[in-house]
Length: 375
Image (cartoon, rainbow, N blue to C red; front, top):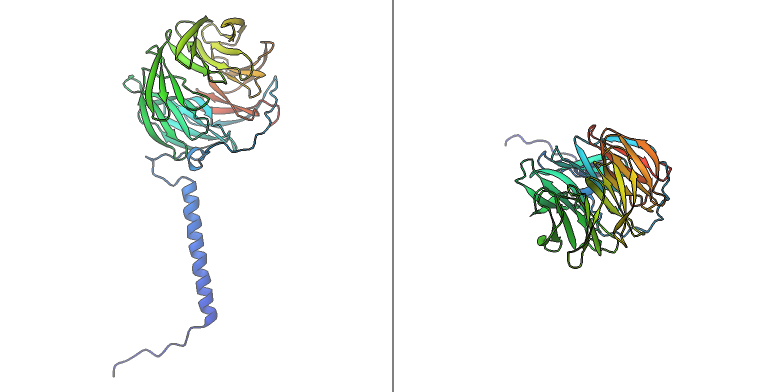
């Protein structure tokens, strides 16, 4: 008879229990590591790493209504964060927790976490440089104007904010600029700077449904709170065009300063404010009469204007001054000049009215302003 190993003693029940518990612990640790790795963006370099703006879908706004903070005449400076090269424009998501930065020369959207004042990822924009961003009212989609250096690509990218992936690319006119979404989310309006027209997109189908010819060269759009009137800042013609959104008809053209650049409609007053880049001023338009009721001198080359959530102040990005100026929307007086980074190009205000975020083009940063007076 061949050799056989001696019989083993029966396994101890306590040892068996220890082994089972150890295996459970190992599996739990492995699952935790997988989840953490996924959250931190364990992806290859060719896929989006969008962080807050894609890993968590903001979805329909179910957050509780919170009182809007009172804006102050002199904001204070908070954090300054490096966000990558050429941050030309920042748009805050409707829920206020994050924003997308259009890094034009880098061909990416940078995801900015407004809760922690940090960058959480980037989203490649392969067709060309992202220029401007507008969110749908529910935050589920972002619309990005895109063109490349030789102007062979001119489109609007439709971004799913839950996944950080583009789901559609819609051809538009040459050099699409600062687009806007209607308050009900049904349409996107796109000013095509070199084409002299505004493209109308149906958001249900992502199809172009119309075009509105305006004076050269439409650069920026604003829509009133009711969604009935749209205002186009026409950069080369020194005019603001007033449009009836029900039928896309031109209602008026309003002469303003030289090179109207950015424009915004007041949320509660019949007023529109636009900055005039080459005459370094703000034009205040009464929308009941479609006439300019005030012209306010500003710092050199104001490039963007945004309003506080309470509408009491406006913020002007004066690109040559490396500063933001604050305008009182009642007295039409400049109340403060706040130093920021180099070449500020846009100001995005949080929905709760507590902070504003300034893109500084030349040094690749975003500066946070405490516009309600507290951090």
